[in-house]
Image 1 (cartoon, rainbow, N blue to C red):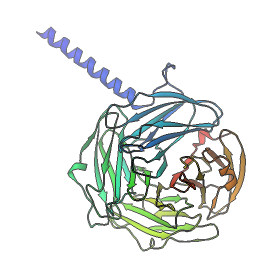
Image 2: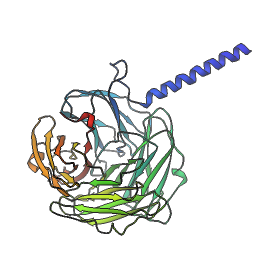
Image 3: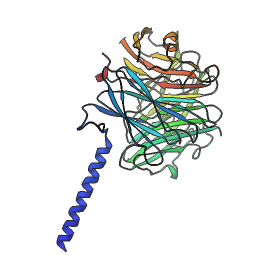
Image 4: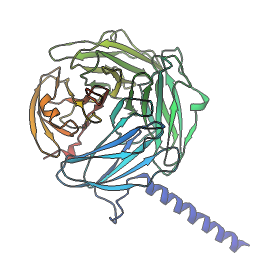
Length: 456
């Protein structure tokens, strides 16, 4: 009997150790099948892009600004078992568009890269009775706390979701708190201690919990595992938008570039602190700067969300700052035909990959370039694939746009932008499709290039 018990204990320990080793293997990027050992350089992009029941087209845009090939592995997730991974190579100074499933609100994807850093974002074109285009960069890390400012349930036409993906071999357990313009945050049983199974993604409707609110921001806290989260806004009368969340603490200063909208910007602000926190915002235009109307007197209450509208005309960026790293903000805009755009903010940097936000022809591509600094930014733009270049100087405390002729020569090309002096923040803000190319509108923030992978 003792020998049998001892043997059983040894077998159980072996099974547990083997399972732990397998789970640990799944937590990080794995080398492609033809490679043995661990890649010297690797990473993962996480893309909670969402989708719809019918007719949606979703693409991952993968750009390699370097001088050597990058190997990537693409895998998609949803409410059921994950799809098989697909491996491919992105040639130097080139980009590819990879179609991925978009047949459910909960759809999400990962891109693992090996040997060479790549930039990744998504582009979604709604179908099946829904319209519009949404574009956004993916997240380069998973974590245990996410802040998602952009959300609304103001009218019955709003169908906004939080998309939460668990791309790991261990279950994740999440709880969500909804912050609105009500006196108290909303914590609902269906959003508390929710399990996200391994290699799955789920979508949560905001209107099913809080209806009739202009602002519905979400704080996600993870008690088990790690996740990645973003928002998907679907307006049955006016297009779609998507925005990646902020991991952990949001930046105290952020810039939101913008151009080509229909004349209105909503600055959405969420405060997760236990006290009021002061905030400031400015509008940076081509030739002037001015306070963002209504923000200086906002002082968002504890555990709340607020939306502040302002008229914007032409190329106009927003700079935002908070007294403490407990306030997250998003910028929401409308296109000429009511399609929506949404994006988070970023800190200035000297080198960026700018992914296109057009979904096809005809199109009207645009890139807004915000310089919140005190010195000019002298920027060189290089089109991946052809190597064609152009240059522009962005004045301090102003917003410019990339030369129109350069963009229109290849509206779906990826552009690398590097500043010889100064720093800046770019965003694609483009129209595409329809008879005249104005049927859809999308906004996608640029992706900063890590210092280690700066182009030569």
